[in-house]
Length: 261
Ligand code: ATP
Ligand code: MG
Image (cartoon, rainbow, N blue to C red; front, side, top):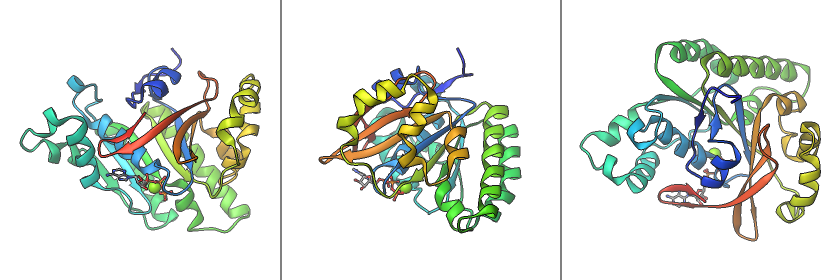
């Protein structure tokens, strides 16, 4: 087994494709257009990371970098009490679960950079089992236009996040919004994608239209890329890059109990 462990998403097809869930020790990227469900996905896995082990959780703390103020502990509690009523109906449990998620709201990239040392200490001292950054693109784009300073800063952050994931051996999940999707993505996917799956490079090239946001260094630094997209009113989650899975897409829905396949 290549990874130190996994955070199961409870989306069965996805967990099977990823050999257990979101791997520890590497960067996982969630890409997709506005409103597709990236934040909902992050809220769900944050809940799962904080859930007691007896319910299949990691019983850990979560550090959640909430760049655009989209985190909602009320929504976490809604997802929790619908998915795990037996836990959440216990007195004080909802508060305890929500309290395990430490939300940081940097208002600029430099504020985030400063908080990275604090995050590192938290990862060492606390039982942190998940780091979420929602979203990386928002964090970077607020600070720079295109050009050399942006690339330099981005490169530094990518390297730091990778090393954080490695030394703390936890999953690091980062979202990125993309503006548009290629037409007929899901339909055309299978044939070309299977061909591209032969090489990691091919897979990357195939998805270059969605990874353009942060550049090629970023694209190569993430170990898992999950692309969320909609077609004919149906949402799909696609394993677009993974060392252990061919490209494969699953339909999903968002309900009161969160993201479900
Ligand atoms: P952005 O890039 O703008 O941050 P996003 O990909 O993070 O977008 P989310 O905020 O995760 O998008 O998803 C928003 C969608 O989730 C809403 O449009 C809605 O369809 C769905 N949603 C949110 N809460 C609920 C709920 N309680 N019940 C059902 N669906 C919900
Ligand atoms: Mg969001």
